[in-house]
Length: 139
Image (cartoon, rainbow, N blue to C red; front, side, top):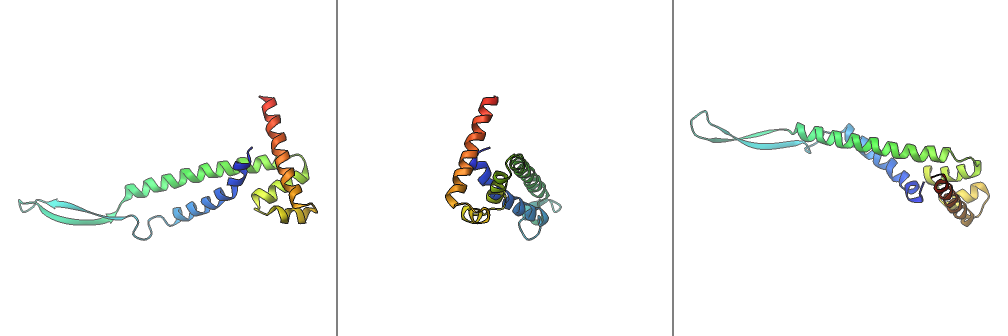
């Protein structure tokens, strides 16, 4: 696990909410209403006619795009949550959960756990380095 992936967690959660809102409200408003011109040949000569309607192909494309993106983001979030839940040390697990899942500042975490703010940062960095080294040795 990298610090970058951990830090993306909150942004991914927010993006999931945005995409779910878009999915729930897909088709509302004018975003899918389109117009086109067709030629009517009933009189023998082409007569342009305006046709207004919903672009169902665009609707289906957007729906599929949003759903696939939500699925990918949910999978990434689940991986981060599983990794954090797998931390054996209770204090470290709490630090990672508060920092990356709950989005608390290091100062607030330090206050809650009776540690200095800089100590939180050192613990996170140290654990990630140790975790990274142990992953390399298992390969």
